[in-house]
Length: 151
Image (cartoon, rainbow, N blue to C red; front, side, top):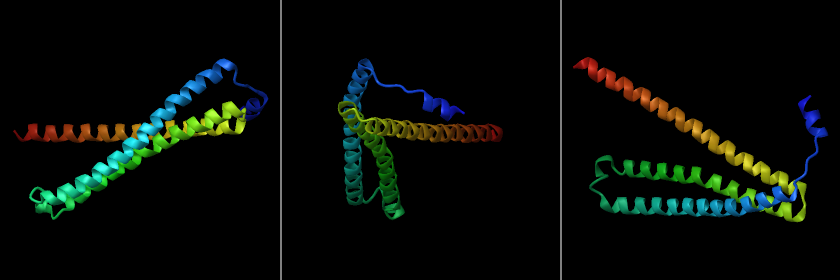
């Protein structure tokens, strides 16, 4: 029922909406490039951390370098999670800009799809972060209660 109503409803972008979207594409392109460069720098610093940490030796020798490698893997995971939003912002920007300039509904739809993917990804990460935070608070609270009961 709802999809048939959506088919009947035909909208188009007026000049004001196009101007707002064009300005948005400039900012999202900037933020997308900045995010991708930041993620690349994060990977570079992670590699430098791994190389420098292996030279330090004493701090990591107790665990045979496992802590160093674990930290390196953790940093790479963070960098990998960081690059996807940058890619989707950049793709939104380029698709939307081309769609508006060429008058292509397909490119505009692709741009909105990338925007949807960006917000979905950020939303999922936010939910995961909230769950981890609540779990940490719960564990911390239980640990605090157990310390109080032992006194």
